Amino acid sequence: MEMKTTTIASVLISVLVVCSLSCAAELLRRFQHAPKADGSLSFLVLGDWGRRGAFNQSQVALQMGIIGEKLDIDFVISTGDNFYDNGLTGIDDPNFEDSFTKIYTAPSLQKQWYNVLGNHDYRGDVEAQLSPVLRELDAKWLCLRSFIVDTEIAELFFVDTTPFVDKYFTHPEDAVYDWSGILPRNHYLSNLLNDLDSALKESTAKWKIVIGHHTIRSAGYHGETKELVTQLLPILLENNVDLYMNGHDHCLEHISSPDSPLQFVTSGGGSKAWKGELSLYNPSEMKLYYDGQGFMSVQITERRVDIAFYDIFGNVLHKWATSNQLYPTITM
Image (cartoon, rainbow, N blue to C red):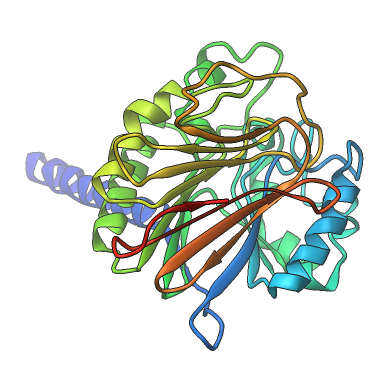
């Protein structure tokens, strides 16, 4: 009897270990996205947008279509808060079509959209946004918690940042968050950070870009996310990440890093913006702060990355470029 009990316990432990490793591996599912024939890549970055066209969402979408055609973009990135105010209620929520399919109608935007979740998305049915059913409704939609897009010239690492933020668990106020698939939280975050660190170390891409919803560096209303500063930022610095892209603060922003090449760019102006929400920040690090709606573009070649920020009229607010050590960083 003792032997049988021990054997059963051993089998259960083995199963749990296998399941744990399997779940961890699935945290960073990998997708291949080929660059253009000349090896270059271009895409748009948008965040904090889904409001059924209100708060200039439709105007931002119009300019995205124009710029997207001009740059012949390969795909679009969403930095989260895809549907306001409380995510989707389910796979049949009309907000999906009203805030996404019917808004981003330009031919140039009918490319793959790579989406991460924001805190407002976690206030709804998270599994709905992750469901393949939405891809059947609109083929350009792809949303996972965390994943990697390998474009050969660059690797893009999408990170689920909402579960890092303590206050959503300890002081949710009136919000109700959908933590299915997250708990136990410490286990989920540990696996995610370990997998991200390993994937970054193994990457041989010319450029490494990490995307999350929450800020690391920001002068906006939310400011810096202390949990990401302590847990995620050291991994980015250790692995020579070139760009960290986020939303969350409803603005457009570019902050340089004083002690590394890492750049922090916020694209959270997809609809409702927060006018006048600006905290003091070191002017030598703050390259752009714009408290209106807009989006950004990224163009990548083997030697150079160019980013640009646009307002709702398509005006260029700020340009910046960087290349390898043989070439200087350029701010325009």
